[in-house]
Length: 393
Image (cartoon, rainbow, N blue to C red; front, side, top):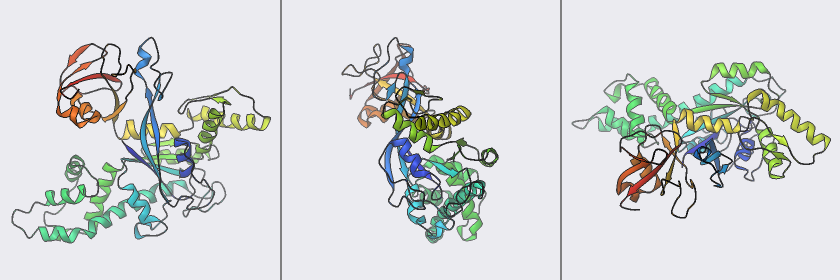
């Protein structure tokens, strides 16, 4: 399962975002380090379910009238402060927890209502663009520190006959969670000495920065957009590649209201309907949320998750079935499984994602939409419904 981590300084809204995205019971407070022990929960990314192409909806619990929600792991850890790579605050714990994340949602207080340490100040008194820069910098220096601490081993290896700097760096970087492909692409993007004894701190920082960018892509979540000056949102959008304006408070309120039967709302919807009895105060609060939702096309919480998985990580959703005519599993459930795969994946990759035995016994695959066999090397597309034929089934 893909793992998405919530990062950012204290009091930016990470725990509220986590609670809104998972509906888990966690502490939410207006003070730094509300989160000390990391929270792990299940959230979802949203896509269109293939059942929209059939006469009836599939009825799966993760499908809401054609809105398909695919599980991902969501991780919320302690806030990051300047100097975290040196152990300030709960920095070491924070950064170590990030090592296994596939992508990061950097929750920024777009209202500028908290300082660099996460202490409350007046709206607009802190520049949120500074927060974007320092979190990336702390992560880069943290990784550079890991590289530096292991560099003596690389130098020792260089004394051996047949030493290859690329192989040594690959061993080092895969040890901190990078894949062989990510390492190869990183090394191609850099110029560096063949002799590790000639490396400087600048070389190691460049290596750390490049591998971080490839292994920990970041979506900036411009939280508190409901009270943020419009100029702050614009400047954040200029400062980062992926920025999603958001109101975690608004999403959490809508999710709770939907559970109580007060509103008709699904995560990621661009609007909602009030369907239950509400007080004047509740109605006023919901209408304020509606204004933000209308301006940004949603609360931003779901959009940020979707951007991380489908845009930054370049994943797609495929649906394995056993009956290619009815799109069912062996028990007759329609489209029971949705699998996230990297773009470029093939039917055999889908088979392995379902189960290693099915992948090992792979024979061929059938496109359930077209009712025809497809080649082993065909690249899957978003929404493909595929029957895997295997000796293990």
